[in-house]
Image (tube, rainbow, N blue to C red; front, side, top):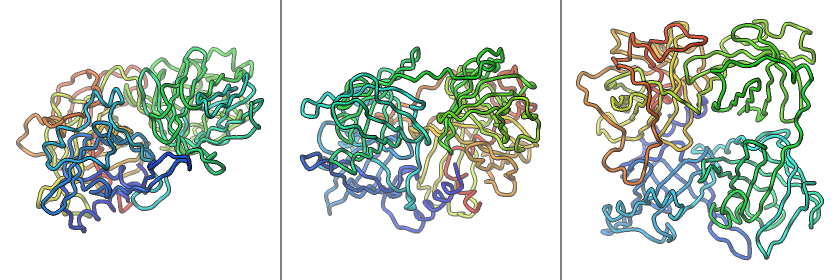
Length: 591
């Protein structure tokens, strides 16, 4: 999480404290901001209305009264009468919020007079899976401080020939053969489509990616900003589905008719508009690279956050520059350095060096050399001078076979630095040692402002500090976050500080972190919401390697690391603990 995001969290809590409210729950900062949603679809084209989500209210639907997992009870008081509705909210990306309600009626037209009736009519898990619940897609335009939305990386990258057709008999359009093409150059956040040899005049289309999430039957939902809305009555926002054939690389991509995900959008090959993509021949690697025997280590293979490794190919999707790097191993220079040949999605080709470190079974870090060359042996590309010290890109494994236990047991409490009216609580779950929970509340009234759930991926020690990498589980986007910590006074006094997306070095948790103290009495506390989890099913928890859990797991070994083992890996993951909520983020607001 970046410093601007941390400041937003602090801004959110200060606003909560200064504003008298009557809600008993709050929307996470990630939900808050300004959105557009489709309001009508007539002959005049798609119309949109603006919707705001504040700390405790969605004005058109009600104030946040109660949260049950991802279900939110919203209430509007009309004198002696109340209007209560239950909505299921899922953050699909930084820019897309999905809203569900039970039944097929419009959300704004149906509510209940009491909380019990509304709770019974929360959308069921079955209705979410079968897509029979009422669904609204909200497209964020500004965050809670009024900043414009960030770009998102498109999961479709590279160069393709394509065939195009529509299925609407009133909107017949087709491009015969595969003369049209698609590419993602210069920015991986945009799909550039060139329609050629079609039954209509040739033109170019740009689709800016807003987010993606898992769909049914191995397919994936995508949302776009469609630039055609500037010249005609087509929707500004589009929902799509795509599926890649892992053997051939071919892709089917279908767009719905409007800004919903259920109008003329059945699957990736059957929608209002359909694209069949065939990869262009990409075997233009230098012969020495293509025939080389260099391979990356077996432990590195698989899917990571923004990296895919297969045999001798390391594919990295840079979330800042929106470039995709296809990196071929040329020669192993040392245990953790590899001379490589890189190629971007725009076909820029150069030699450089890749440095890789295994931090745990589910965590790796890498650096790409700062110097590139057109010749592999022109200079010493793998010298230490070609790397920026302590500047790593941290990645969590997606296809995990083993889960890492969190290093704490029990309950820890503290006060948020700079906002002493707020108290923090961090606790573990002895039945699922890979999970931790974090809560921010009013120190006087105990009113809960925010709750988070984290999955620990692992940890390591470096320069006397403990780094822990986690995955947030209470929002659907499941961001990865890093924390750095120090242990004081016989494992009962800890300091934790948020360390960004890539485990930033040279941070001092003792100087700027949050202090948490272990409490004496502790019961086996489960997840944040238990008996009232009406519809929210937690994401499946893989069976972790169960490690005996002491306080902070001091002296307890993690599952053995066979390659590039990090000394001190038995130390506890303090970092993980803080990861759990906005409190640690507030700690860093003054940054």
